[in-house]
Length: 248
Ligand code: PEP
Image 1: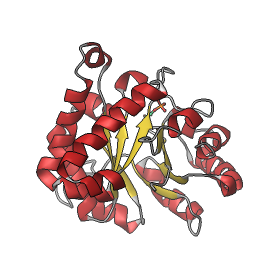
Image 2: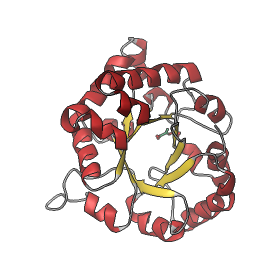
Image 3: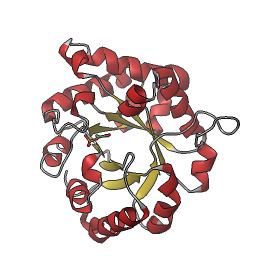
Image 4: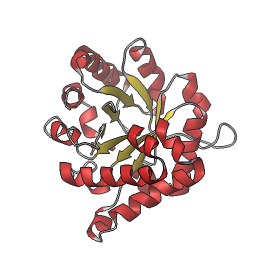
């Protein structure tokens, strides 16, 4: 039985004050969460998050990772640096990294490899644009994004990873994929992995991301291949985030 994971992606949001307040609120209400819970903070606030979450069951991580360990890569943060602050997760291939920062499938695969090399659990984001869905090529797009990782790291690497299916048209738009639309793609992803390794397919957690909130999380998480959510906007308010953590 796979566990449910709810991971917040704070993106470029927060300050010392608001993060203290947010985490205080989350910790106050977390005891009846049904899911495992994590937050992915802007790099500069990771030490603060580490301090506040020490000794709690809430995991934390970064929103990206450099494919390099050290060297002349201005502005980057590496796996060893994230280890220094005991991060558990690193998001890789978020659609905003792909579209706004020109990260290609191979860059995402290299970041995925870097996270694993340093014992971090990659949260690998995949998902199609609206026009790709309208062209009927969702499965092709998601397949291509997964293949880049499988070719570099092997399908076994997915056993210790998390996949997040995030249709780009649903991210931050208030338009959630219907539970069935999401389930169809999740089942496709699991089926694709199963053709290569049935055990890995059974084990890998596949989260849904895209305008998840307290009102739709129950239905989404009830689908057989949806193992939780990657949450953007609703992870910034303790009350909203907790409502999702208690779903399922
Ligand atoms: C995200 O950025 O990963 C995301 C799912 O955002 P939102 O929940 O705001 O759609």
